[in-house]
Image 1 (cartoon, rainbow, N blue to C red):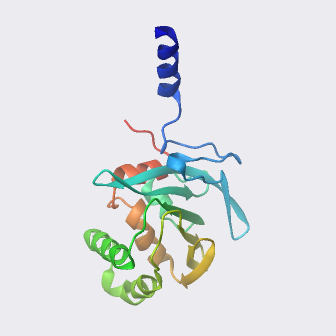
Image 2 (image 1 turned 30 degrees about the horizontal axis):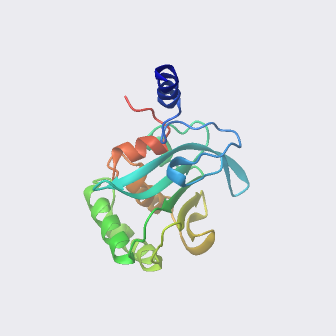
Length: 194
């Protein structure tokens, strides 16, 4: 009995922790009940899954995320460069629009690299496009160079916002040097916890 328990614990210990680097093949990653494909197509380019993570607030699971970008993307700066990318957030609970808007605004204000005044009209566009989410809903922020950032809800396009500067700032909420949560950012980038 002790040997079986030891083997079970050993097996669990060596299982990949959600939020660590994911294989770049076509395998599916399912952290915390949210499954994400191993690849995502953006403007005809297949992007590998760079990493997944779980965002918690006050010990509550808020959403699981997956980040897709070219193979060479490993740092926040590379993640925010003018390359195709996709960030998918699958919600584990309902979230009001007002809460999403307030959280986004608060995080953007804390990032000194963001020129809020220059981006205000486009930030207002995306803030006005958000809809209430329920458990299981997915928002996707998909960026294509020269085209802009497309917001999708459950695979349906909601709005497209132009500008690489907008993508850098808005995706920076999750991926910049001043993100909402550094551990979540590192998980999305496939960095292993130290």
